[in-house]
Image (cartoon, rainbow, N blue to C red):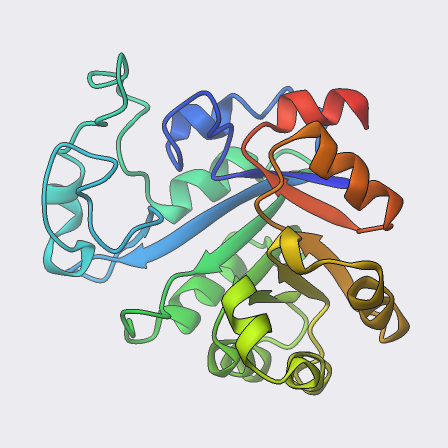
Length: 243
């Protein structure tokens, strides 16, 4: 099973920071996952929330701040407030960190709440500039985004993110229809909806399943028996040790 570090080694270090990513370098895992937003001056930065309030000592939306302003902020994670590796990194910084390695980088485009202009193009252009097309997976909860990515760069693997709420209240067959039409390589569901029927249905269509939210040994072992292809976890060091 592929082990992917969710926002880096985020179970122990400030999520989506260079420190959390650097701590993954010596782990025997498949790759890392990160989230991308855009600044006021159109820079690609790695942070999960649309606002800085939860994880940094500031307030406001990423879209309303320049890169220079954002990088003055310190982590609000206890004992890491003054760590130079615990700032908000650019996507380019993180990609360059992993470029010499065998790691796969799952890039989630965070445009389901804020529709960042040209986010898809900017990410693809950077990936191509660094010649890392074979080292990334690009994921999104928005099928419009995945379709746009397919049109821009069809060879870059795409993953359709599925929340428990979406799966429960929308037509389940719609998920597979959309993923197949998009030629998605992966579906990335919340692990709670990943039962045997769901996984088998994906596999029959040559779609791999990468589950997110997997943070206990019990969850991991259950998904292993169900033959899930991979998981996103905050504790990759622990789960990879039993892989």
